[in-house]
Image (cartoon, rainbow, N blue to C red; front, side, top):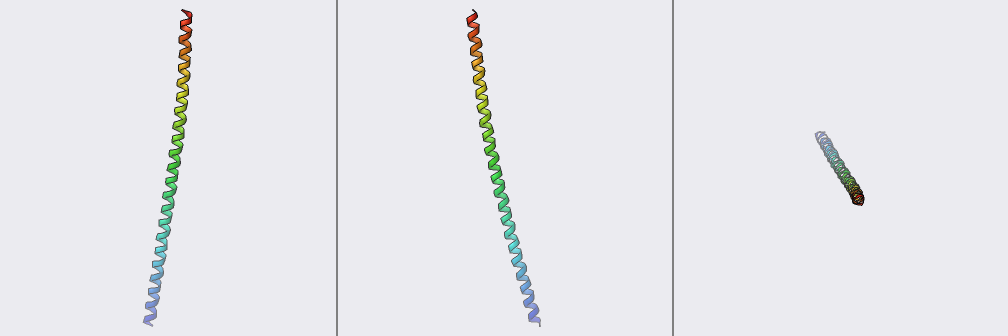
Amino acid sequence: MMMMFREEHERKLENRRVEEDQRRREEAAAKEARLLADKAEAEERRRQDKLEMDDRARRDKEEARARTQEMLLLIEAMFKKE
């Protein structure tokens, strides 16, 4: 009788160990998935930021070119008046 209780107890302990191992694996997998998602999100943010910076630089360059053209036209007009 004592042997049966001992075997039952060992079986329960083994089941708990298996469940705990499974829980740890699932937690590790969930953590890895979160890390990968965070990494992908950060990469997307960096990509979007770069696109925005490139677009801003392009607009700034176009605006500077337009201001330069405007100044050249004004200077040209001033010299024609003289």
